[in-house]
Image 1: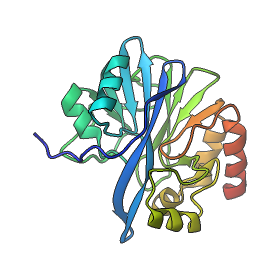
Image 2: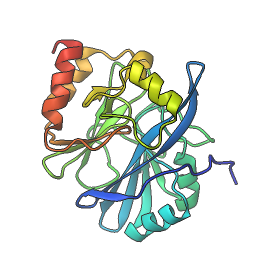
Image 3: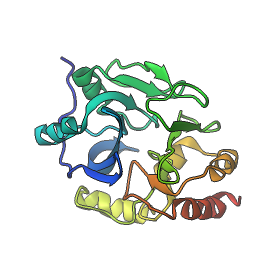
Image 4: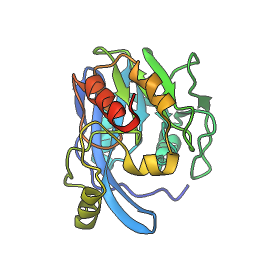
Length: 238
């Protein structure tokens, strides 16, 4: 068996929209020579009895039991190169299909089983994908054609309005100073690494959506498009 990362503290799974679930957990990592300890989110989409996990977070035994009560894990979706710590755990446990855009790196010997590309096959009904074309590393956003459009992003779009219970004191201080805690934000470290260009956000601006579920922060309901488009205008002048 692969030596997977242990389950770290997390909250309960909540149904945020019909058949769309959300759970917040913990991430500990070293970035730019510093130790970071902050929260991250997993989105779970149910299509019939099949479950798709986006931005995986390993759950403890009770959390896995809750997950399995919702349906059968069939798909794992990796939308950003800077996430994926727990993808291999779910792949081995459930023999799930791994979806990712072209060129996506993986850990633990994992590979992409099916490409996520516009107009291609999708992991569940009503899904489509927006792929960034000008970033340094592969990244995409999944759109769910429910509730007027739900975007599931990772680091590109964030909605961290403040630190939560899954932060260390040091990371809370550092990330406050770095400007992480803003509604409808473009990820600061993601931007530093990927050097995003306005051309991608012009395309993203035109997508129809009402809500956003991001890899970091709380769900942004009803006004997500308005809020993120205001951010795109602020950052890129578009």
